[in-house]
Image 1 (cartoon, rainbow, N blue to C red):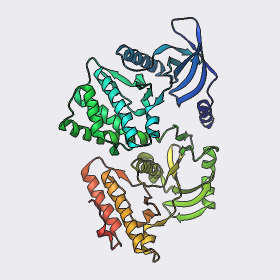
Image 2 (image 1 turned 90 degrees about the vertical axis):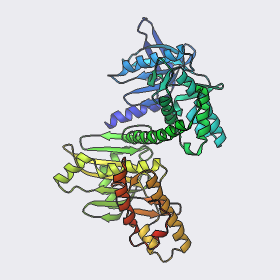
Image 3 (image 1 turned 90 degrees about the horizontal axis):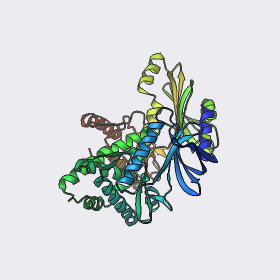
Length: 472
């Protein structure tokens, strides 16, 4: 498995010098000189910038053994329809099979183009971001008028060149016979808005009015209410999708599965070293580090690996039924990993998740490990008991804790074990730890019950708690 992973990483960073494609209706073979790999998804597809007969092109190679041909047909059909309907999209050139049997589609390369996502991220002020989104919304309105809906709608699937906005990823589009209706259009608009960070600080009303003008509409109160509802729905959908992505191999993470363990690593954490080395020595690393807690349920140690100051928490094996239960409902380390990722997605402070490991015996979870970045500071318990802490520091810390509680409430999240030792106070924020019991609730009643429990737990032995400005 590690050999396969290393080969995949090499393929992404060191592209083949050329790709030879046999066209289905012609005997000749087309040779493309590859410049660089633009994107690669293991086992699915990779996209290259290439040169074909002196012409700059993009080649998308579908490598899934089962679905590759279907994906190719969908991509070619989508590009052809976009061209026929007069929309801005790369011109399709030809398709065929590579020498390794993979299916590929070749399109023109749009000259001097930059993705809308990159432009948005590099924009220096809000006005520049608004101007960019104004142009994208105008192009989205054109697509909807032409009865085209993007199923993978985000700024990375638009490129800008010569004051034009081009749509990419035609294989992820749906085509209709009539322009999109009002509800579907507003849902698409909400998906686009949620795809970029900091959207709640931008003039959304003006963007919506610009889109509505492109459709020949008036954006009324009903539209505004429906948009707000869809923004919440799509925000949660994107969160779920992003969390699933943290469980597989991607640009940011490496997933390894063997008969002995399952592990997911942050790429930066194990950069330059093999993840298997860490798994093999994880227990000895913990024993040689600073032991923070050693109990029957868990073992926590602060140590160093690959130049990083880390905390490793091992959830211990107890008995067969304990392992069976956590095999079914997933390990506490996995839940903590996902919950830490969720908190960071909603701009809340949590120890940076670096890895989690699940040790297996005959496919039964035996024990699990969570690896996080070390966070300096005092626990809330130590902070409140410290006689050296000034009244001003206490006031600032109390405000930080109130912000954490209110942010949890805004997102319908309960911590599940909100005792003082699970909150770290440092110079910048209050940081939540011990996240395996944390839950994001879909329904109001379970959330309200757990919210009351969280507040009761944190208010114990804190005389000034009632003065905090906390939304119940």
